[in-house]
Picture 1: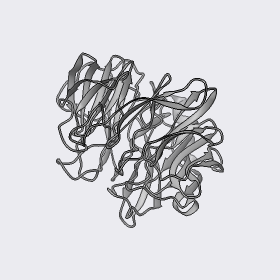
Picture 2: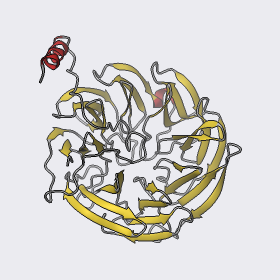
Picture 3: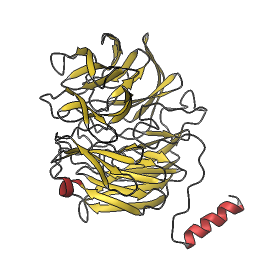
Length: 435
């Protein structure tokens, strides 16, 4: 450590603040599914094969229960969890990326008794321009100083907006659009989706009276407007991003309680959505007006007889004219995005099981697959098929997230600084993937 770094660290300790994390080399992973929320890891210098059957962590840090994925920004790792003693509380944590040393932690009372699978918070912490935004399973929204943990502002969605907590808890990751942070909380009186000033916490707009869905919105440029595309518990809707004014809708309410989970996916003028009961839908954003039209819909006869991709909580990858995703029982599939026709399927990456899942991340010409057994797979996916290059155990499955199949690892890992960051119900770990 050089003299300047020592002086800075010493001054920070004297001021009662955590020392700044060491300057990292590589790309941040500041929100769910990466920098652009698209599952792309734009990093080089990564290993080609694993050296053994089990990856050795650089560090481990104790953690409690939760589904939220870790995020990484400015040399810090963020994640949330739930503890039951001395009282049920959600916690938001910040760790040094190199050592796993705790930099700060914020705890607040929170009871999950009304939430199915009450294992902890769902939404990942979103980090943007020095602030960290967390959203808990029953709607506690916090804005922190990302470096120190100082609380800038907060909202209790149940008390302030009469949020109707969906069956499996509030799960939509906070979404930054300009000077706004947008959350889907299922509030009453037209507050399903609410935008706040990201600096002050002041409400900027609210929209829709729907039950909340579980996925985060996306923003697209559509017919000369910035349009927020959000999938609620009742519809897919296009809202004017600046005001929340409804522009178009596509009814997509099914008899299932868990459909609206993945975020809408957009490529050019096409918009794709997929769900367990409702199947796969490809729509077109019309160029001359803020409206949509159906291209194709593929839906099977039931959860064991599906068509296309019936996604649950693992978002597909959209690569050129093909979609790659995990179906209801863990089958990895390739679709022709132009027609919805299935090109191939395989059970090699994910063991068969109801709700079985795997997270897919594109890096260069390869795809990193993290399956529910806690294995990390390096593969190539193409219309020609699934080609596995290497596989190793990354983290142990635990039973809190899902008490079947010997436990699962369902939280999406973060990929940053040529490392992978993964969590279960006991620990957060960091492992080098540098080549």
